[in-house]
Length: 117
Image (cartoon, rainbow, N blue to C red):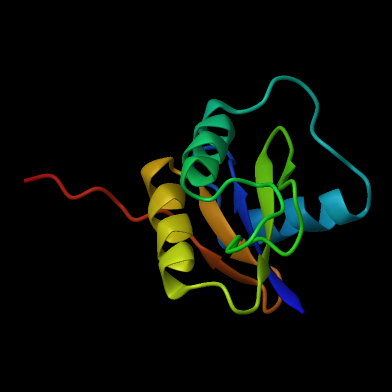
């Protein structure tokens, strides 16, 4: 059994409904073309630096390699993965300005708003 998390790189002002709509389009086979969004590439490099996306003991991934597209990275996590992995995914998604979708319940977590001061 696994559970999924997907980080999405959408344009400025994107809302939770935009993420859900992008996910629906992807599931229907409608994909964005072009060059990979730099935020997606940076997130992928960062998350796989700590958790390589290849089979092996102790991997948090139920499916490897991770699914990387132009505008998103889908991560199928083993149900017994450590909470630290989830926290790292959340932290890195925020650091790279990505929105995080939990497709199991449709929850979308936008990156936090930077605080100046």
